[in-house]
Image 1: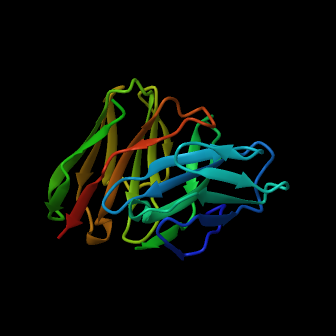
Image 2: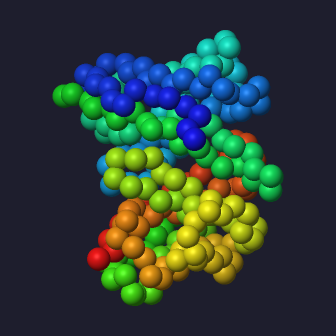
Length: 113
Length: 115
């Protein structure tokens, strides 16, 4: 079962910031929060990940709530190329010592010109 | 080179056919994954190979048979599929399946249609 919940869809105007929320109320103290996005007709691609403190990279920022039960992916200036499905993901550690992704349902982001 | 390649891009097969999907990466990654994705749904994990050994099988029907001939290659052999198996099949790789933070690199997928 998915460990994360996200809104099904969001819209944003081009050149404006976008805040994509994710709830993960059952997160454990050692779970990292991962974000991937899937552009049309492509496989998912890595966006960002974090554990406790806020994270920034060239693609986005990740703001993690103090209780870690929610997080927000921030695209600072949305472009038309950012239109994609954004997945918030936690991992499961299996008995074999292997991690596996548990994808949430994702948020389909539409960017308006 | 951070690319994962998958062949073929599209595949149409009958329920009695035998076919194979192929995946390749040259990043030196030791973990490789097969996912199945139905339309407008998130990817679902099928298999994980770690150091060329099958580490996870998510109770996938035996008509799907994975194979990892070496650390760069991953195959998915298909036999006697059903129409409901039609989906996008994604391959991914990561540096190691045992690391919490290793990102996965996904290929573009093979669009499979079973008639």
